[in-house]
Image 1 (cartoon, one colour):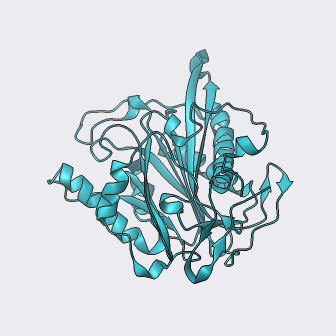
Image 2: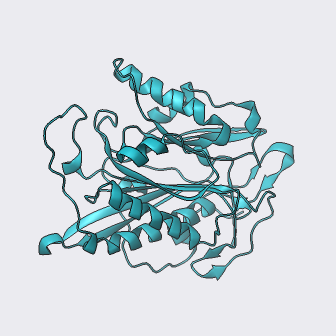
Length: 336
């Protein structure tokens, strides 16, 4: 098997926007990612956390929206985001049956920081890694969230790590992937550069194409259904309504890789903005001034999101190593 490399090391790709320094979601200032991973015989699973900015997310919530492509999934905490349009915790990803444990771990983390909290809306999504992992053993525990928090970093590991340890994509080994884009926009005629980054947890199928090149799907079973969690971060000044529109384009980027969002697929995109001027303390009761990018200038961000999500999905495939899981099932690494 060849050395695992990101898609740009496998082939030349043409995009309309440049990447950030790391070509990852962590190119958006303040965003950090932490993984906790288990690879142990018939267990291949884990946790991935995304920190939205450098401050405490509960004390300093950010605008956020969720868009559902196909709702066969468990995205705990999404209803309050739909209602209020804010994110007040780190975002957690894990396997289907471990959502409650990751929620508890995040709640405990925030209570340790502020014991006066009586309500907090933690956001945790999932995909089902039971093709390779004995999901019913419930090995993920709340204390593992602390390990993922300790691992928060701007250097984002990809492939069969964290919440992507046991996932499959297009019949191959899938996992975690990330990418970013930098966009120049001229509000009021003054050029500004904004960064948009995506992180994906891939566990779905369809008809794989890689930048227009048709690639036969792999052989792992349970190929028809599956799920994809997409997280999009940006430092552009957007509100929840605009972020919902951004999140729709995250799903579009997934479809561009060949997914048709099968009946049993849980496909969600979470989008948030950490534009510094719009982050205020939850205790601030004064009138707020909110900076917004005009809708007429938002098209470059739409395109950048599609590009970043698409590349992140390919990175989740090209960076993942082969895994042999429960019942000796093998998910082979993509070779092309």
